Image (tube, rainbow, N blue to C red; front, side):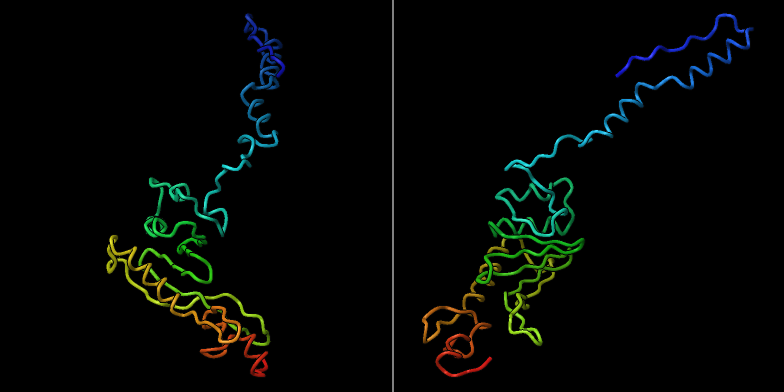
Length: 210
């Protein structure tokens, strides 16, 4: 930065021409502080180089889907957490590796994919849901969805009951799986044509047309 020379007020204040010259120079003189601010704003990253390394953390609210690390506090700092975030933290302690989605007023926790559970967290209630699919009109491709298993107000849930409650939901989901009599593979009920045949085998061995 070029060092500026501060103009000096003329010692002879009665000299109007000198006084005007001084004031003009003062107005036109660059302000060192403003020059530093302008230079910082013109830099590619005014707030510093972005951290793109493997340990970089992104606030949960900035990404609609995020994988929760072992230390879930990284997403919800305890001194800033809202009510819904505090409730989600309690749940995430029992659901390692869960995937989290959020809107302003709701946090959705997806745990263990198709074999797991879906949890809706609001400030007022805990909603436990089981994965399913929705067969859309005019399309043979199923779309992932979920269905209600149990909904509880938070004043009905004790912190020491959360683990058992989540395990009960996971057990309910496991009970929805059946083994196909033809291919002997396990399928969730939404992928079974009947209690004994999956969709593919029902088409292949029983002549069912979808």
